[in-house]
Length: 328
Image (tube, rainbow, N blue to C red; front, side, top):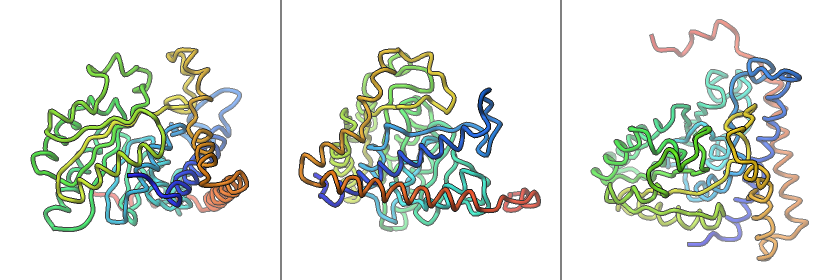
């Protein structure tokens, strides 16, 4: 299964939009944090995890999803949120802690939640697996359209919740797909020192389901692999496991000095950037011209700038709201 020209253009534009959105978030995050870095300072306090380099995973997956499909993501989720159709203005307002945000400023950047498009993310490693399998079970029991996706990092595949969820998804033959984004680093621990096998896709055999690894970080290759898993899920044939090799161009979080990472790997980051590669590929294939590519970039940047203008001008929550919408 190969993407159409329209789908390829959408994937390119969504990757460009996500990257510029991350750049704006990065600049906003660093306000008030120099010359001495303190993550408590500035308009965006706390940790910030960026998905630069991992955009192909998001778009290759998102191109197949509909409004009826659940998508449960990890803490590095901005690109996936955009690919699922999360409202950019409200997501930006949420990240900045504003009343106009998706959760009225309560959740921040790690726990993005948009019920309108059935997307949510979690900061607890691997623990989005159970709720996603539950969503798939609900769809099957009700005889409803739609599938469920859980997206985790390769470190999340070593959590107990991963194995429990995979087992039940297989036992119940659910319309579920687990997508593992393998950027080779679980915070500062390399995959080779934390995971007993080279490919997590091989673990699928233990649950009696197909497993596939995509090593290219190319949107077209990811689109094809995801398409096979989605077709299987929609046909009632049960779950699948995909591992997508990707690259983390930033540190684990903003301010991470990455002293644990080999210098040669850090120096090679510009060559590993998937967006310039995909742009050249689409131009060479005649899918777009240089002029059309620049037009896509300008349109994506304008949308992000508009979202930040909206969020920065939005009102902050009042202290009295702290006890609203809380279970007691």
